[in-house]
Length: 259
Ligand code: BTN
Picture 1: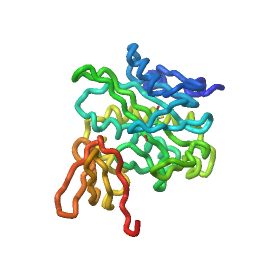
Picture 2: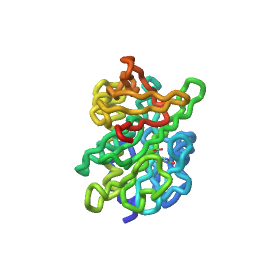
Picture 3: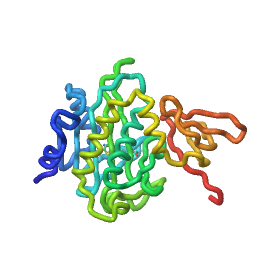
């Protein structure tokens, strides 16, 4: 069976992924999904590719998706505009949920990275298309390193890992995609709720630890307290002030003594 046939067999009818596009190769699944959304694709339309020629990461970085090794998926969503800061968290939380189905306890490095034992295993790129203050669509792109060949060997600002390294066995990409897409559907329905925020916060990495958050020109260092009402990272600074960092932050890093 092809990956597309397998996915069709695994994804429940009538839910996210009912409209499914599977490619051997694309430039970026986010670009393809955005074009489909622009042409009126329904909410829940799913684009999956085995290989991305020009995969994109946050902040204009490249995202490698070598063939046969990783998951590259993008989902078309048309959410209400009330909670835009939660959109990235939605992707990260769904990946963590999906990994839990594989018996793996993932943490979320705020705002958009998913970690297994401290190494980055997945990233989320949420791209919204606005017409004035009206949201035309949101594309939620998710990249997961599954096999060893998907982990870039150099040029990374943060240590990377892959799912199979931690599972200690072969992991089916189709099964993991299915679990992530089902989690996306479930969590999307909870997006406006306190329950969503609680689930996100429960998965948060480095809570209680000293972290550094880069926000444009400003860098904050302090103890990570948890999430604010919209999913901002709350930091307690050394002078006792509390600051909230929005999802526009470039990066969050643990600051450990001796480093
Ligand atoms: C990051 O951590 O910088 C975000 C990486 C997001 C990568 C995914 S792979 C599927 C989708 N298509 C892309 O071009 N990017 C996202």
